[in-house]
Image (cartoon, rainbow, N blue to C red; front, side, top):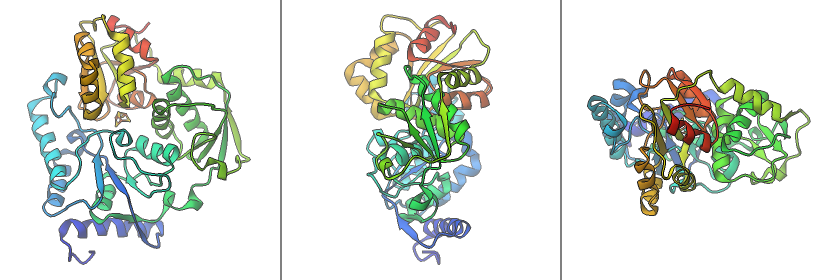
Length: 389
Ligand code: F3S
């Protein structure tokens, strides 16, 4: 493969994997059950990235189930989200290259909700940080946080170098986090991720004190904890499969209500007017879309504000069936399938964002927006009034 006997894409991929293996001292390559590729938005790839993908697509075919992270636009309704035809043309070329490689162009950061679901202990090569954290910590699969090229390389070869979080000795928790805070709203899980991310400082947290958590709360927490500082792996006592194998580490910190308040204070900017409300970072589940429809029914989004629901196309199809799409669109909301507030070309278009997501705030600040994080109810109130109250 490295000699090029299986073509250009495989040779390039092997060069990447061998280089990575050498850097990290891997002794072998191991099979992966699936791949998830980030680096899909033309906004981030540019023409150089598109050219790189087109070269690989000449003879590259993936060997395992491979899905995509969000693109820079809704692949069907991009006009509705204010995307330019020039951008759409380039983004479609990117998607076309991935299609020719045999990749499922699912364009979502929640692959585990749409059919790319690894099993406990399975080795995979995923890129999206929130999904990597979810796979490692909620499912108990094993993956490093891949870059876009190294994930693609694993897809063409069907293997990845055996290092980092693929090895059990690197998956041992090294800081205990005792959660004493009360978690009531979805955004509290983002605030908790912020607090633990800061306190864990690139360690692997062993979290105690949480009695219950649903998938939506966990995906929100995963996105936040890795964005704000921890490794893409944690153990939550009673929730992470295999957590019982470990004793709580001696090094220990706690998270109280005051830490959550501090997280909100750091994430929230001074801003009153809101011109974009976006829920769905990570992408909304059908349960979250149902909640949004229930809360917005009969209301109207303010004239100078946009309200986006970011989700996978598969989740939207379920929402269509259940009538949630019609309710949200009747209120003036828009679906942003296949994309998200971080990877769409939004810089300069909006001044201030309201969202339920701590990670969404992090990236929207980089896009020059002032940010407010709160509950689904508070976000819908901001969409309807155009203000954060
Ligand atoms: Fe997903 Fe985009 Fe958030 S990729 S986790 S919706 S920043």
